[in-house]
Amino acid sequence: MGVAGLVQSGGFGSFSKAFGLAAAGLIEAEVITADGAIRTVNEKRDPELFFALKGGGGGTFGIVTRLTLRTYDLPETFGAVFATISASSDDAFRDLIREILSFYAVSLFNPHWGEQIAFRPNNVLALSMLFQGLPQEQAEGVWAPFLGWVRARSRDYRFGSEPVIMSVPARAFWNPDILRNLPGIVLPDDQPGASKDRVFWAGNREESGQYIHACQSAWLPADLLSGGPPGALADALFAASRHWSIALHTNKGLAGAPAFAREAATTTAMNPAVRDAFALAIIGAEGPPAYPGVAGHEPDVAHARREAERVAAAMKALKSRVVTTGSYLAESDYFESDWQQSYWGKNYGRLQAVKRQYDPEELFCVHHGATNG
Image (tube, rainbow, N blue to C red; front, side, top):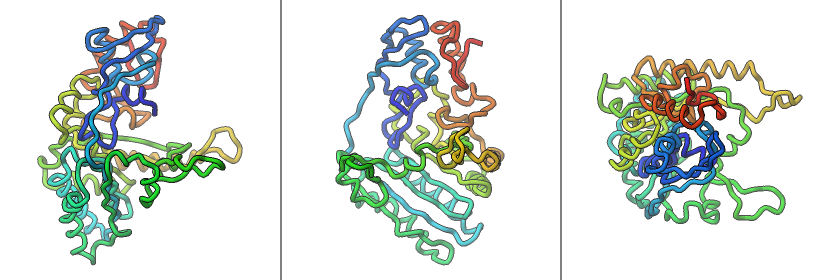
């Protein structure tokens, strides 16, 4: 995804719990509208079009050719926590889910922490969390109670490998010389003659050319962590994980973020539910690179549909047990039925008005994008 697409979809990064939405950081944009005009838009010039570009959907209101974005000082440190924990039984896995949610609510529900907590059908909890602004010793101290709880129950739980907790100077976070020395973080460009500085995130290899079978997402409101029936969210996650893996992207949701980040989100077109969501639950399935019509490389459609059914069953299990509040348009179901409300909530009518004003003949038409109707 390019920067313009990131902003127009709303835009999250690993540290959005600290710095807010990409869309909220848009100061000014240059955009070519359907009438061929080149417009520079901001809060004072074409403010409604400016609003629509801040999370109203890419490719819908014009062609964005330039952006001016707000930036922030780097924190002292960035860091990561990686662990996989296997439970010996369904009951033990239920307890583990409750424990990680309780631990998250007390210790990680703040601007320092983001990224993923995943629950898998084989009773495995996978942690891949990133943090900012904490030194190594403090990060280790944060996780000590939870890891100690797991270690004290060795009959019920087993680590896939020793958990990794690491902190590096923030300015070194993208330094290839440092990243290459961290296990499993980056991979080198192995093409002949490639520069040694050319590396990429290891997790992106599976995404390159992948054939997506299904993707569904749902905002989880923060009151699920403390309100409602005790254990309802844990029970919902367990039920969903019986069908397929489900991941909580805790950086995608602004509950727990600083007040400025939550307030800035109100100036964007995104569903206002994002302000009160502590995470985005994502359930997806994909296969290796595949190309319809290319013999020997065509997708296995029957297999893809079976996996899509399991993804749908997992999301149904989640939604039947807890209240969710919409979906994130950049990571959602292609067949989302109530997409207007799901993606934008009360803001959809305002986006329609912008569409009618700047693109009355609907030159720019995208799947599940604002229309004049």
